[in-house]
Length: 184
Ligand SMILES: Cc1cc2nc3c(=O)[nH]c(=O)nc-3n(C[C@H](O)[C@H](O)[C@H](O)COP(=O)(O)OP(=O)(O)OC[C@H]3O[C@@H](n4cnc5c(N)ncnc54)[C@H](O)[C@@H]3O)c2cc1C
Image (cartoon, rainbow, N blue to C red; front, side):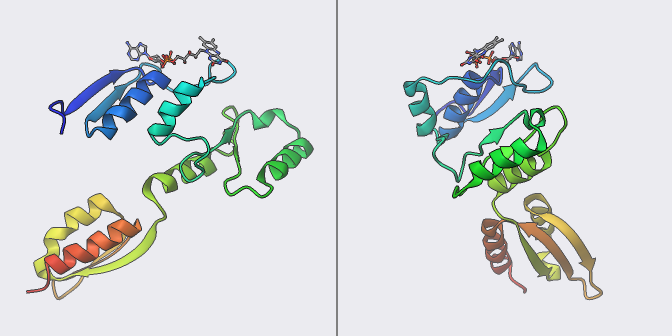
């Protein structure tokens, strides 16, 4: 383990974010500071040389990896209805992960994009029902921190029933924790 435990990076440009990712891969907690209120497009795009692309691929940012990379097409508001539909249907043709069309001006497509990012970051969410015996109520705090609790019922016998949305790995962790802190 590195002796440095945390780092602060000033600037969330490609250099800062690449450095943040590299440090995070080494187990260093990174705090990225950015002065701009929003990260916006400047110029036509970023051209990356093959050596830079290789470094990004080593860090898991590989344009060919459709499980991790989301292709976004901005400025969709510039196209009329017919051209837009043609472009999107051509681009979706046979592709596992077709590009997401958005407009940073009108906001079109942004909810789809943010939903997809959330899904990629947290994985597919499952609905999980769990009932905690009185001796297991210490787990409630953990459940709130690790899942999205959509319903909670405090039962007359002192147990608590909860319905939450969480990833498959959280579901497995819940099962393990409940087993570990089993009813006494
Ligand atoms: C107008 C313009 C058009 C361009 N067009 C293209 C193009 O079409 N294709 C291409 O390949 N390249 C283009 N470039 C170049 C490209 O943007 C840069 O090479 C690249 O973004 C540099 O990345 P970087 O991370 O080093 O710096 P930047 O992307 O500049 O990131 C630095 C970040 O640090 C933040 N920052 C600075 N000081 C502070 C502070 N004190 N506190 C907190 N945050 C701070 C800034 O707000 C910024 O977000 C263009 C550049 C400009 C200016």
